[in-house]
Image (cartoon, rainbow, N blue to C red):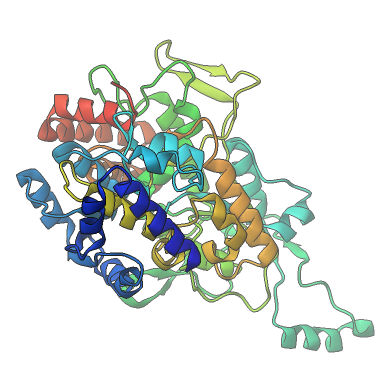
Amino acid sequence: MLGSLWSVLWFLAGCGSTQSPHKQQEVQGPAPPVTILVVGNPMLAEQIARLESEWRGQARFGLNVQAVDSAEFQKRAQAGQLRADAVVLPYVQFPYLAELVGLESIPRSVLEDPRGQWTGIFGTLRVRQLRWAERPVAVPLGVTVFVLYLRRDLLDELEAKPPTTWQEYQKLAEKLARIRPLVTSPQQSDRNQDDSPGGTSESSGQLEEAAGSQASSNVAPATGQEPGGKPSVGEGEWFGVLEPIGPGWGGRVLLARAAAYITHRDHFSTFFSIDDMRPLIDQEPFVRALEELRAAARLGPAEIVTYSPAEVRRAFWQGKCGMAISCPTATHEGQTGEVPLAVAFAELPGSAEVYDLRRGQWEKRRREEPWQIPLIGLGGWVGAIPKGSDRKQDAFQVLFWLSREQATEVAGRLPDCTLYRNEHMTQAKRWVDQPAPDAAAIELALIVRQMLEKPVALLAIGIPGTEEYLRALDEAVAATVRGELSAREALVRAREEWEAINKKWGQDKQLQAYRHSMNLP
């Protein structure tokens, strides 16, 4: 509370320091509430509104929180009628606001605040995700990242380490698919001891080799259904690896897998050409990534093309798979298995090779270049101030209060979102999956910070129509995994859809937005 009060008082002092005493007295009087528009999440709007009384206790103005759906937001943005002092929205909607309305820059007084209002945010976010057209404009309210979940006990048994390349990842997944951990309840363990010669039993962490069988034939497909038709992993099933390649996520996983292949030191073009907005999604880096994704998907259930990060996390914590890709979040409350898991976390794998689009060939990365390239901007929430706001200072004050002092009450309650500031490191358990032991939670927090402090990262598609581009990729992933199309055929079809989306939104406008998202002139 004292930290929050000090932050507010400092901000108010900074805003009024150049005014006359008469003006300062006017500033200290009652002021109209700041209107915050929350896009696509009524529950988040309610949570921010519940914080209004605490805000009122420290500031001279209140909060008017309004919730709108995505369609209404886009309609208002296109008409220039947002009528809001601040907007809180999913990152995928952020480009609409930036390009159709325009954004105010974060004040220099905040950027240079020695107490770290801005500088306390992880560096990769400050430099890449929270800037637009070379200006810092957005305040983080929850960041989404992919992380590798691993069974530490199984790695020890296999004498393996977390994979650093996608080729190592596939080999480890195949080994994990051929083994099944003998996990039993304490009662079952007691019975085993009584029934065993000499009163002993094999360790619950021992591995059972599936001799003579193929990796993909060790388990049966998942058949259970949860309310709403969502798949659940059935009793007794075991998978080497699970990835969230269902609707809304398959395209993102593909981009994360391709990040190290497409991020070349000499080129800015990744998903599109920065010269003419020509889609590059059917080029070799993405074809390789999709072929490798399909190989890993074959180690999972038939319904893997419907899995979200939540389903993957649930299966992992229930002891149904040896390795998984998902998004760490404090909102995960899935049931765990009967025996606590020994877990480890790691960055997603990368590659020692990168593709040169200009030369049309693969080449080795230089020794000093990182192999693992994180994908950022694949989800999460941000707050921003529409261009021309006459409450700019007040609105930024509120956003940074929500982002910093109230982070666990706002970002910490958002699904698939995790930490994004240095001070969050002291409360790691509040930002990661609840089943994670304390030591594992700290390990995960360190990995997230490491990823979001890297000098090189790939920013996910961040232009108007992002959902449409990603939907086309989701379809390409599903068609490839189901065996309906080859990886190349599916991506050629996706490229054609991307070309149509470019035309719909305007090729030149999309090119400008793409360059702005990459902080290019």
